[in-house]
Length: 311
Image (tube, rainbow, N blue to C red; front, side):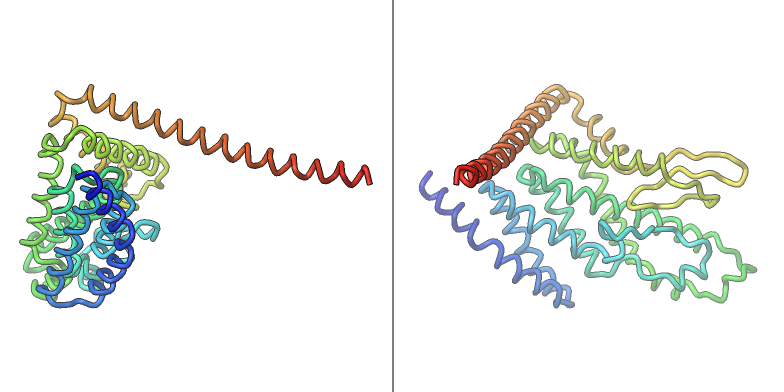
C-alpha cells in the first residue's frame, strides 16, 4: 500500500497544475448550468484527492481558483472596494448585480467543499473564510434591499420603479436562502470536524477577527446606517451621536464555533500551540540558514581581499 500511495502522491504533484489550468479555462468559458456543474464536480473531485494525499499546495490551488470564480472581481480580496447598501430604490436600479447565477453556482460548490472536505483543507480554510465573509456581506445588503422594496408605499416617488426591474438586480432569492442556511450550518456543525481541521478553522477565524477589529477601530465614522468595508460591517455613528455595535462576521462565527465545540477547546488549544511551535522552529531554521548564507558570502569576499593584499 505504501509504495502505491507514494506513486499517487508523485502523480498528483506532477499533474495537478496543468489540470487546474484546464479546469479554470473551462469554467471561465462555460455559461450553461449543466456545463458549469460538470466542471465544478471535477474541481471538487481533484480537491478531495489532493487533500486525501496531503498534497496541500494542490488542494489550496483548486480551492483558491474556485473562490476566485465565486465572487465578482470588484469584491475579491485586494480590490479595496467598499460594498455598501444603496440609500434608496433608485440606487438599486443603477447598481451592478450582486451575484450572477454562475457565481452562485460556484459559491454552492465552495460551501460543499467546506462541508464535505473540511477535514482535508488544513490551511486552505483561510481562503474559504475570506470568500464567506464577502458572501455574508452580500446577504446583508440583499436583505436590506428586500426590506426597502417591501416597505415602499404606494405614494412613494419610487413607485415608478417596478418590482420586476428592481429584482432583476438581485440574485434569485431562493438561491440566497440556500446559501445562507449552508453558511450557518457550516459553523453549527463544526463539531463533526476532526481536531486538526477545527484548529485550522478557529485559527483562521481568529486571524480574520483581529483584522476585522483593527479595521473597525480605525474606520472613519459615517452618518449612514452602516457601511461594509472589505468584508467587515464597521461600527458607525448616527447623526444623533448614537453608536451601533459592529457586526463582525469572523468574530460571530468564532464564538458560534466555540459554543458547538466547548468540549474540545483544550485539545484544539494544544493543536494550535503545537502548530505555532513548529512554525516558530521553521522560521528560526530559515533565519539561521539565511544568516549562514550571508556569513559564508562575506567570508569569501574577505578571503579574496586578503589574497589581493598579499599580491
